[in-house]
Image 1 (cartoon, protein in one colour):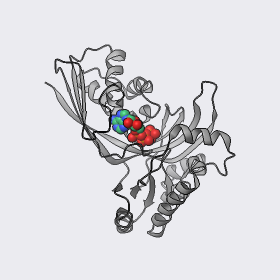
Image 2 (cartoon, helix red, strand yellow):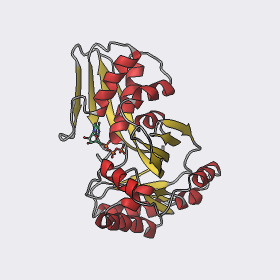
Image 3 (cartoon, rainbow, N blue to C red):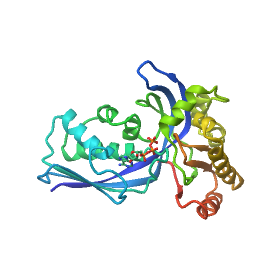
Image 4 (cartoon, helix red, strand yellow):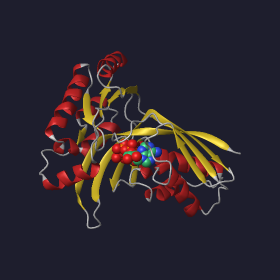
Amino acid sequence: MPTIEVKAYAKLNLTLDVLGRREDGYHELRMVMQSVALSDTLRVTTHTGGGLAVSTDKSFLPCDERNLAAAAALRFQEAAGVDLGGAAIGIEKRIPVCAGMAGGSSDAAAVLRALDELAQTNLTAAALAKIGEAVGSDVPYCVHGGTALAEGRGELITPLPPLPSCHIVLCKPYFSSSTPELFRQLDSVRLRRRPDTAGIISALEAGDLEGVARRLYNVFEDVFPSRRAVEITGIKNTLIQHGALGACMSGTGPTVFGLFPEGDCARRAYEDLGQTYRETFLTKSI
Ligand code: ATP
């Protein structure tokens, strides 16, 4: 039975802007996305003779079609018009769940890439991204990966020059955030500040890490309940004190990350935050 192993990389938001609410109920977004080496590992096997079987090392995750990896496999069969003859997907999770790092969407994108290879359908990344759109708004970006501008619901992807080389520390506080609740909050407040999307793109084009780090901004930080905001700010301050050029929350949180030019400083921040927060990682952009 043919099997392949694929990585599903976590994403960070270097910026996240919400431009408004659309008539279809979705929000119009503009985000600069970055994939990082922190990843889940998926083993995908076809022609297992049965239906679709998903397994994961995190018992609290669903293994039916509510798992985005399973949803992607079902959607792939339908859209590409292939019968996989049964499939098994094993997911080894490392990306924190409900953390603003698109772990589920990234697993879905990895399944699409794996099935394209196993079924020898040779679909382009754009075609796989289109299939992924129905699975989740972040899936098209996860199919492409790298540094990119994501607009619309998140499905309109424009590749950008890579983030200049740096060390990245990620830290997830112990609480989880509710994405629908944060969007509701956002609709009812006047934002204090907006990200400078054009400025961060210019800094990426110039290979200017400091310029990028100075412009990290996520509008959801403005609407976090105050007791949570204190914790987010505390983590950001720790990252900056250790030498991060900038720090920001990713997605709808609560993960916070910092960009470091120096590996030694990043390691000290990682060790310091790791004493309090179990889900702290030292990683690189990819
Ligand atoms: P985003 O950044 O796209 O908002 P997130 O990082 O906040 O996503 P995920 O970790 O992708 O959140 O998970 C969100 C929800 O998706 C959880 O409720 C989880 O049960 C469900 N889910 C379904 N499939 C997966 C998967 N393969 N990995 C993680 N979560 C999954």
